Image 1 (cartoon, one colour):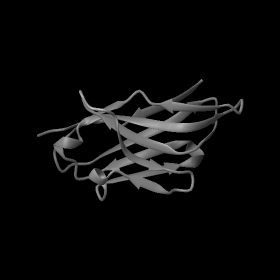
Image 2: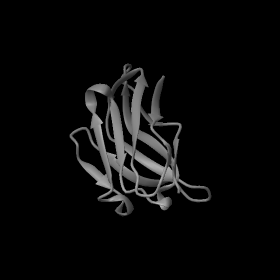
Image 3: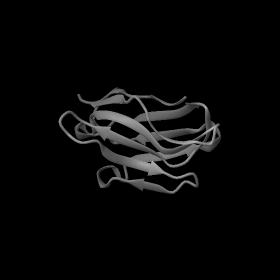
Image 4: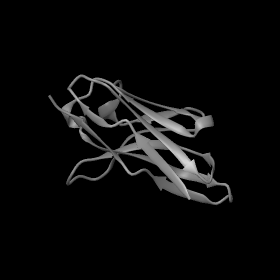
Length: 121
């Protein structure tokens, strides 16, 4: 069994910062691309940022210059540093790994359970 365990969400004032973490656990051999998505009620889940094994990153236009995605391959963990947060960043944030290689050399796509980020004064 493979899981992505997220942490770090919460309530923050506009202009503040939060750091999300996403750790792969279970029968994991390796993790390919890791990414963060977010969703608000009534809207489709949208891409926030992705990062490859070698550190190549991709960001949604709405978060460029404010959010930074990073990872520690040895820990099978990805991070999302969110600065200059705005009320419109309020959402449930989901971690995604579309290509996880298990100890049995099967490949899985895995989603985290989601963590709520609320930006409000």
